[in-house]
Image 1: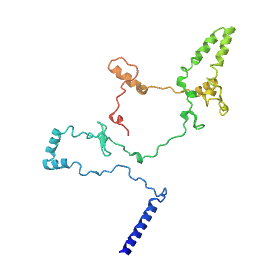
Image 2: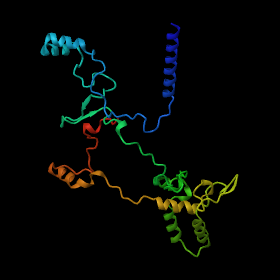
Image 3: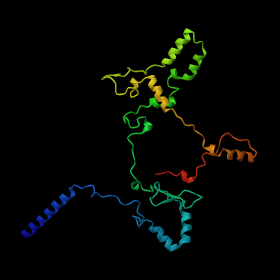
Image 4: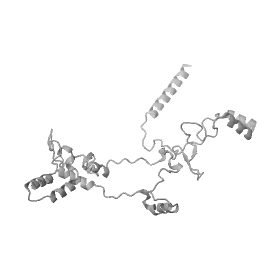
Length: 270
C-alpha cells in the first residue's frame, strides 16, 4: 500500500512538472496559432431553438401553420426577426430591381482582409516626408488667406489703386513703400526661444514665432488650388435642356434630382 502511494505521488509529480514546462514554454512565431476561418459557421449552436414552432408545423401542416403565425405574431416574416444585430448568416435584400443583390453583416470578415495601412507621412499634411513632426497648417491654409489678416485683403486691388494715383506725389510713394513691405513679420519674438535663436529652418515656416510675411505668402502661393471644379450635371447638360424643351418648360439652372440614391447605396458598410 505504501509502495503504491509512492508510485502515484511520483507519477503525479512528473505529470505536474511536464505540464508546467509545457504551459510556460516559449512559443515561436511559426508555432503560434493562426485563425483559418474566414466566415461564420453555418451550423447553429442552439439546435433546440425553435422546437415548439417545428412541433406545430409538423402537427398542423405548412398552410395552417403559416395562417396561425400571421394571426398571432406581429410581422412574422420580418427579415431581421426584430433582432437588434443581424446574425452573420442573415442575407438582407437591398435592391428591388435585382433580387439577387444581398448584403451580410461583416461580410467579408474584417479578419480575412489585408491589414490597414497607416502612413506615417503624407504630402497633404504639408511635410511630404521631410519632417513627420511638421504639422503646421497656417502655411497652406489657403481658405483663410483673404479673411484672417485685414492687412492682407485684396492686395491686387490695392496695388491697382496705388498705380492709378500720381506717382510723383510723396504720399503715394510712401504708401507704395508701405504696401511693398507687407504686414511684416508674424507676431512673436522673431524665432528667439528660451533656448536661443532657431536655425533649423531658414524659411522660418517651421514655427509661427519665426515665420515672415514673405515666406508665408510664397508657401500659400505654392499651395493655392489650381483646379476648376465643375458640377456633376455638366456631362449631361444637353440631355437636361432637351427634357425641358420637350415639355415646353423653361430651362432651370443646373440639374436636379439629387437625393435619388438607390437602396443598395444607402446600406451601412460595417
